[in-house]
Amino acid sequence: MKADHMVTLKTQDWLATDETMQASLEKWQRVVDLITRLLGASAGYVLEYHEKHGFRTALTSQNPENEHREISTKTQPNDRNVYCRRVVQNKAPFYEPDATNKPEWADNPDLIERGYVSYYGVPLLWPNGVVFGVLCAFDRKSTEYGKDMLELLECFRDLIEADLKLYEQYQIMRTLSMTDPLTGLNNRHGFEMLAEQKIRIAKRYKHNIGIIFMDLDKMKHWNDDYGHAAGDAALRAVGNAIKDSIREVDICGRFGGDEFAVLGYVRNRGDLTTIVARVRNALTHVKLSVPQSKSPIRETPEISSGVSVFFEPISQSLDDMMAVADLEMYRDKKRRRR
Image (cartoon, rainbow, N blue to C red; front, side, top):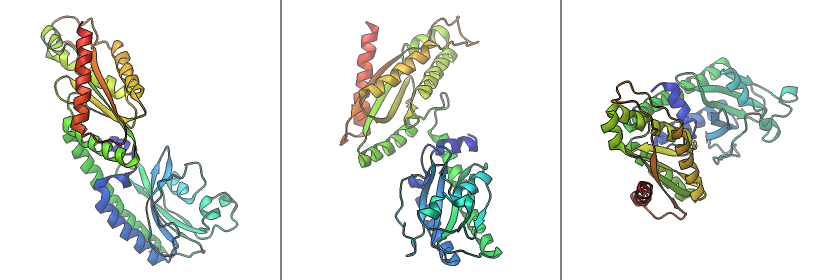
């Protein structure tokens, strides 16, 4: 998997919430606190950047002068005229010694709402050049940072970017170990690991969990009458239909053989039946052309499905949830065979 694909996957969530990053975040915290002390600044930050949602605090300095030491989950929209936007737009360091009375900062929330008249920030980049975020320092008084101090901040940037490279390499290896090679979906191990994370978050924030179980109908028919290459093509078609039909926040996987699963946060059963309907509709448009097929393929893959919703407070284990959805799928399969 290419690095840019990993970054695309990452941007579905904020990296600071990833449990595997905790050791790095502790190190970054020391970096931000040290920068703030060395510069005599009011506050230091590592801010994550998301091209759709804007900026969000990953961590901030814990010095007494910083009045916003608590980490907020609120985002700063991209269209706001903040100092960090200049850094992201140019992918380059930006230093504002004194923004007082400067027209270009007249609507800057950093200046107006928090009184930060001085700012220095450097971009934090993924190995492929995509912006991860900004390492920056704010001050409520004008500053005259020397060249050495500015270069020091860039050295700290290099330390953080080295961690980003290690994180990305780890994610690549993890993804390879979690991926079904035929469909490109999560394999069973990958699905279950991600599902357990989703369930923990659901319990914390009081979300409902929905699970869909699906399998390819007449798998033996596909393999016996058309050949195993056609059976593989049918499985890939189901996998593609699922990927194209689920929401960004859902996870999906192939459990081996002809079985697939989807898990996500839902309001009610209708959220799940909508996904199933999309998958079935997508499969009606599939045209399989398999050169190695024993005979021409004049049919499209079909699925059986089972859906179950588990309302908060959630007490069931993942295995229990999967068993309920699996039973619903086999009931659907029996109905379809009549």
